[in-house]
Image: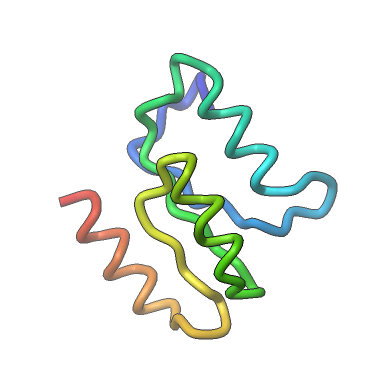
Length: 81
């Protein structure tokens, strides 16, 4: 992520080998990544996860069960504009 320096990162809360919130915490603790725009995706839609992500400066949170690909695309487009 540091080498690419993206405008925005879409991070899934449920990754195969590591928790997405662990990745989020690591990114935010790195001073070079503190301003990176991050959007979180979750298949669970739990309120606790939403609150955890906001505490780490997540710009937007999408529940996979309640959002379509179009919803996510529009949300990201709005963030980047």
